[in-house]
Image 1: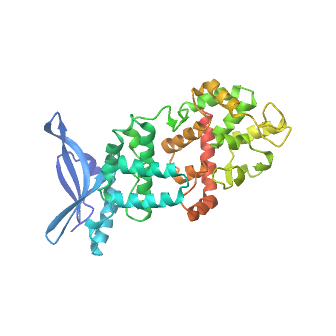
Image 2: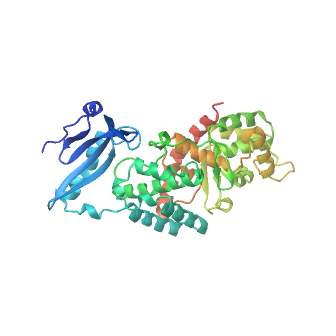
Length: 392
C-alpha cells in the first residue's frame, strides 16, 4: 500500500467529516462538531489513528490530535508514531500488552522512593499521582495526549493550584521516564509550554507550601524598586533572586566561595541542604553586586549585618522585599518565582532547572552527569533570568 498520501497543505484544507488515509494503517479522522447537543456538519477535531488487523480482530490506536491546541501532533510526528507501531508489529509484539501509565508511574515512584530522604516528599509524590492522575492509570502510556492531561488538571487547576501544578510536573516526569525507555514518542503532553499554557489559566501570585511567592511576571518591578534602595539587605535579596539560592546560603556567603575569574559562586557541602557542594554561575548583575559589596567589606562575609562579623538577618531581607512590593512573599518564594519562569517561559529541561535549585537528582549517575554537563546550560539560563529581571 502506498504511503505518504497526505500533506500538510491538504490536511489544512480538509473539513468534511470522515477518515482520510495516509497509507499503511495511518489515518486522519475528522469528527463532526457538537453544538448545543445538535450535530452540525462543520469542521470538527482532527485526530490521528492507526488501524491494523490481527487474526481477524481490528485494533485502532489513537496517536493524538492534529494541529494546535489539545494535542498538536504534526503529520511528520504521526508518521513517526505509525512507523514505531509497524516496527513492533513486524517483530510480532503484542500491542495490547503495552505498558500503561500506571505501570510506568509505579516504576517512577520506585525510583523516587529510593532517592528521596524526606518521607513527606515521598508520600506527596505517591498521593498526587495515585489520586489526581487516576484517570490516566489504565491508558497505554504511548497513547496519553495533551487532552488527557488537560482533563486531569482542569477540575483542580483553580481550586488547588499548587497541588495541580505539582501533579502536572509529576505526570511530566512519568512521561519523560517512558520517553527514556522508548515507550513514548513525541513531545511531553504535560509540559506547560508545550500547549497547556494555552488551555489553563496562567498562574499569578503563587504559594509553594507555606512559602508565598511573587508571581514571576511581577518580579522585575519588585527588583527595580530594590535597586533604588541602598541597604545591604536589598542587595542580598536581589542576589537571592538572581541566583535562585536559599536565603541561608546567601546570608552565609563568604568571599572565599567566590571565583570572580570563573564567575562562579561555589558553596561548600557543609552549607548545603543536600550536603553536596553547589556551583552557582553568576550573571553580570550578580558579579556587579559582589564587587560593590567587596568595596565596603570589612570581613569574610559578603553580606554583613549591622554588627561586624554577623550576616545580614533574614528578617531585614524579608522586610525590604515586602517594602519593594513583594506583598506577603517570603525569601524562599523567590526560588518558586524562578522555577515557574523556567517552566512557563523557557524550554530548558526540568533537570537543568532542578540542578540550578540544588535539588537532589534521581541517582548518582545522573547527578554526576549533570554536575559535569549542565553548568554551561545553567549559566545561559541564569543570564537569561538576570536579563528578564532587568526588564523594568
